[in-house]
Figure 1: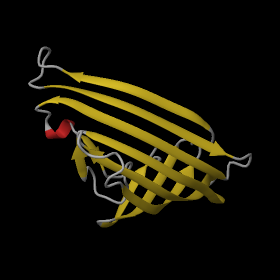
Figure 2: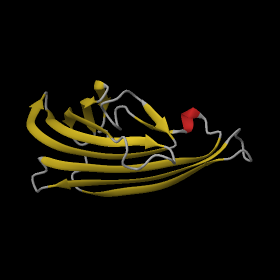
Figure 3: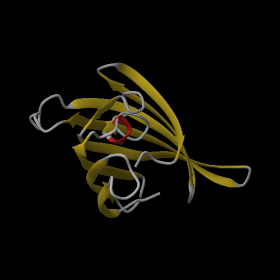
Length: 170
């Protein structure tokens, strides 16, 4: 469980006909995360920004940028949207509201209201057009330091979606 700090990655993936593939494409990705907490660590604000773009000729559908699912745009089904690029902003307030010891195992309950905003796009879309907001809440059961059982309920323009996972969405 991260309670404070910054994290960032940049990536480049190359698929080339000249090596072993049938298609050529390049994927560019930038991601940043911030975790902000007070001294008690009872409240942790988690922020994630992600951008990705795939260029090339005859890009297979499964290589396109996708949004939707348990970790990105949580009000839509898995991989609901696909296109050449995607942009995503996620904001989550992780609030630890109950600590208990059950069978000599220290356990914490956490509630996490969240907002995800994102879209997929091609080169002709204006950046701001058709952003898709998702609001919701997550309930987490934590067994520190490494076990997180999570249920997230998100509400988007298609209705609601419920996801159960092990681990944080980001």
